[in-house]
Length: 364
Image (cartoon, rainbow, N blue to C red; front, side, top):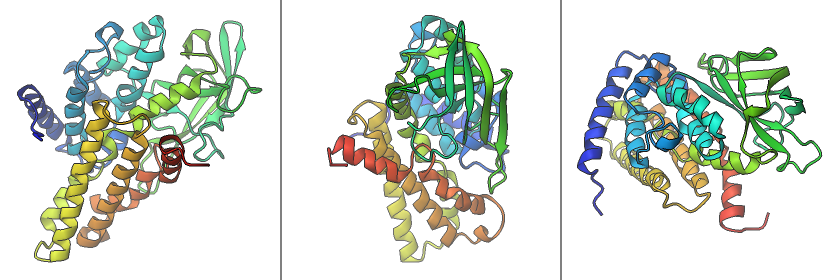
């Protein structure tokens, strides 16, 4: 098989790599840039270059470009550690979700600003005490005339203290079965009654937040898609989240830097480097297969498990071969952050259950 990019994609890759490298050149840390590298200025630059909303149909406000074009750009950004966090959620999930399920008015109102890099989005899924159960939603949205009244709380909501909107999964029918009574509502984060409190992690990052909603009122027009039909929609949205190149390359820049410092005269070190490089190539092919639509439905769970567990193997490797791990800096941070790879976006245990039950048809 010929894995070389066609000329037009190779040219785009060269341009994207140059832009990404320039944006990351002065950054102290380049790992997890899709969640830790927040820059509204860079979001605007990506929008100006036409690198946001690339695959959203032109009729819906996007650029109507191919999935491989977007893959080439996002791979270059994550590999270099470009500060893409401010535009990441809107570009990766919200824009495509609105294009698929949003009303005409919602597309006209929200998509242009996502594509231009003018707005930052967060997603309100997880809740306190709910663990990994996305159906355990207790945040309530009650219809009150021309508005929804929302009460409840979300946790691990990245960028909620910086973002303009939260795409909120709510309980709209408390009497329906758990998976059938949820709806998705767009909530401006400057609405009265919304409080976003950053959660400072062990690296002193502040992108996670706990968000409370106290009698928050938003127009009924902010309902996205089908009333009480969120489960199908959110499962589709997670396909965008779980199978991207960001689940593979979060610490690849550090891995390559550490390989330059590693003792390659040691045959065991050489074998480990080779095994990890092979894993990176396999993971990339899995992501490309998802990108071009060749993977079975639901297989993104397997792609995410393989890629994020490889990221943890990379972190383990650099912790053993890089003496800088004993000093606060990139290596130490990457090692401390590594457990999160297989938690965020769906834990590996839960995703293995998904694979067993939904793809293999195994008994519960």
